[in-house]
Length: 364
Picture 1 (cartoon, rainbow, N blue to C red):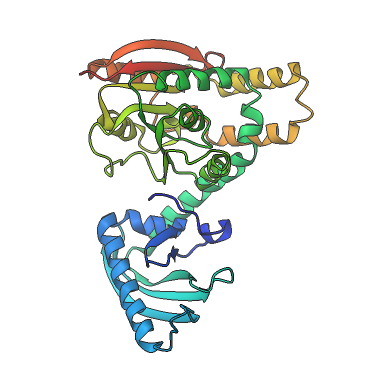
Picture 2 (picture 1 turned 90 degrees about the vertical axis):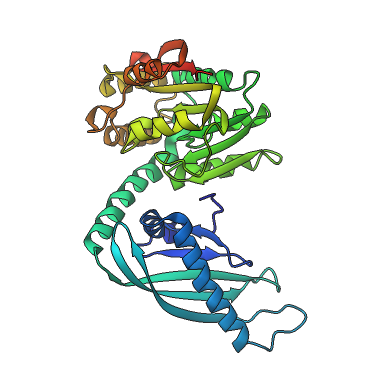
């Protein structure tokens, strides 16, 4: 879903589904719990169903409020409907859809509409709650990381070197449309936009994308689309949609990195550029953190950034690639690309030898 943030953070993490609706009765933003429901249906079918029920409520409300003046004043309203949808993952779901609309204090012609989905009956409710808890904890890890991510990483020479590698590869001639998988706060996306590229940014972390949205305010009409979703399913994009694919330390944090890599390959056009930095098989987190800390001390920044550094080290221990059950190291990626006929044009170590950057072109 293309992100148009309307929900505050507490609404986003609320343990019940809710969504925001715009003046055209289109879904503008959904929270984490609602996203889990979205993922358990065909997205199109679920959205169509919700729109149908919202439309029914809308028409009902208009019929009951015929005193609308020509000036466009809109009354506050509350309405609800009971409905059910069959979910492939959670079985039959019966829910009450409640819509509350309040006049926007800044505009006499618009309403703020919030739709709450109260789950009256979910056949496999334990499965739903388990997925919600798992995704909530993962999102909260990145919520914490987002506070210190740019503050620390922008002081790391090895990180700047890797970002420059990715930017250079994707700002070359013939690369106009780029998909940035695991875009984070936009440290590759934004330089590409400034170089005149069109970028589609994909990331699961609401907090990281929120940082990117803030940074994008400094740009004049950037050619960007932002989607908060898993890169393991890019079915919304046709084969060969992009001239370039960027993946900078994103696959390691995915449940199914092989699926995400397959999707990245699929949406890349023949001859297109692919650049990936991921951990090596010899990845050693204590070694990486030790080198990075020494770098901060050498620059005289350790004391100044100690709080942020503590946050970064804590989160990295939680997302340590070496502890993952599903691993796809850069050597595995290289082997897969070679079997697929890709032309590997460069392979360089990064992160003090713990990661590596691979550049390749898709066969024509």
